[in-house]
Image (tube, rainbow, N blue to C red):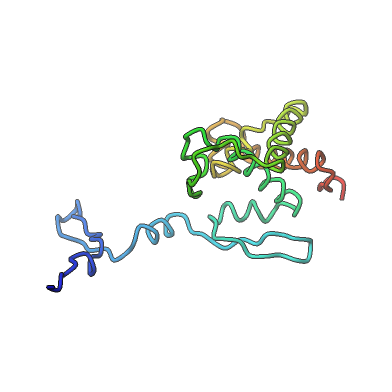
Length: 187
């Protein structure tokens, strides 16, 4: 038996490129992650469990973390529930974008639990209540589910700056009212 050499053991990606200015090879020792970090920095966010207790969550873009910090603990719970319900509704439809971080293990999407069914039904009721209150739930989804910044949604929808944030917080208050949770207007 002979020793086989694995040529991939020492392999590392080559991040070099030619500069358009002076046509010289410039080697960048950065990874795509560090390049992205320079473009849009991240910070760890704190979930508010109560007014005095917090827990640290994963890294999030600083713009998102500022918005998350403005929300009350109940609004944060509402945001997580809306995001989860949206992903549950699109689960099994073949859209990988609905939850790209989730591992696809099952072939069937009909194994919903009662809790998941309730989340989806509350989501639909929330969307109807937003419409009755002259609020728009789709910009809230753009921020909560698709990860767009409030500024970008304002520009895409051609509304004044700050409209998306105000709309989002009002939509989250409606969800909180539906669940019987306190809102900023009731505290």
